[in-house]
Image 1 (tube, one colour):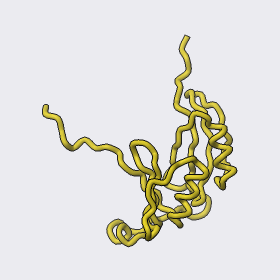
Image 2: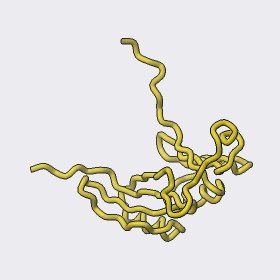
Image 3: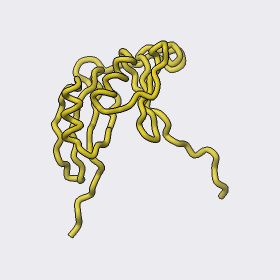
Image 4: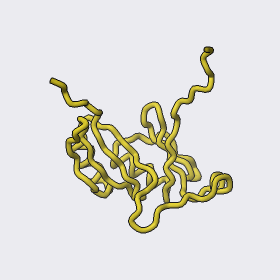
Amino acid sequence: MAASNLSPAFAYTVVYVKDVAKSVAFYTKAFGYTMRRLDESHRWGELESGETTIAFTPIHQQETDQLTGSVETPTGRGRQPIELCLTYADVDAAYKRAVENGAAAVSEPENKEWGQKVGYVRDIDGIVVRMGSSVHPPKKD
């Protein structure tokens, strides 16, 4: 079988937020990212995040609203329809920095049975951010 030119590469995660500039600034301070780009209109911002990009755009944006409808956010105590998962070598220090810089504490880091340390916060738009170590499977005897 011939190799395909249609193999995808995961390029972006787009997060719909109230204020793009504020979200970009928040993620640089709270989670240690570097801003890659913030356009002059403040309708698009990007963070350096390795091989993929975390991008921010307004909740209401005529380009996508006209094509796919407006973004609906949960009402009441519902969970946001996205969770960002970030990996750190020192989860405790990263969690502390995030909370000190405006992230809302949800669950302090703890060791999980699958070999990962994980903590949770919420960003300034209420989006859950999972902060974890790399997964290290439990050692077998």
